[in-house]
Length: 301
Image (cartoon, rainbow, N blue to C red; front, side, top):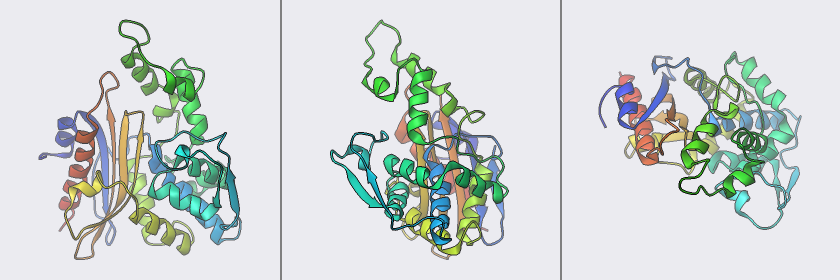
């Protein structure tokens, strides 16, 4: 894929924003970096940071056992959501699952232990006034389903459209795309510029306690998703990142790219597709990698 940021997004059939910040001297490149966007699971970075900072400062016990009942679990495509029996693990290990495989059950357990006030207080304290998490994931999914005309998220996932009858698959996707969760003016939100600033502060140990920052960096470096930002780079380039996506409408990733020479660039790419048609997920993922590569190349000097 070749072109400008806007052309790369257009080729993939989406619109997008990007910000990149070179960590050693704060040089930047960007497109629409101050536009509000829906972060999806990229917000798990600040949730993890707030939780680990609370552990390091003694406000939470990282070794405390958390029991996750099989009967009440946040839906998700991976991890604990797929298991049949009760699960028990430490709060600290839940944070690791949240960042490495984007586990939704772990995320809601960490939010319950930490509190949204603490999560949002941390980002406000860093001057990130446009960044906010408005609810846990279970509440968000049920609310989205309700706005789309279903009783809850389980009812939505059980729905099978019938040809010629309403609501159609397109109707449902359009309703979901216009729900509060996918409207950064009403739901969780951030900007590409604030996201790379948060990453910069994590990487220089000033976002929270140094040990909390270190643990977030370590877990992000072990994220299993490698087909977005990392797809834009070859061997010898290290990527520590957190991906996010919601209802096929938004696909995002934010992370730090470190070249073989040791220079690091924080990159955040947020995309959105037209809900009236099913997006080519592979094309959008590839565009995220191509945009990140272009951003890093522009800062290579």
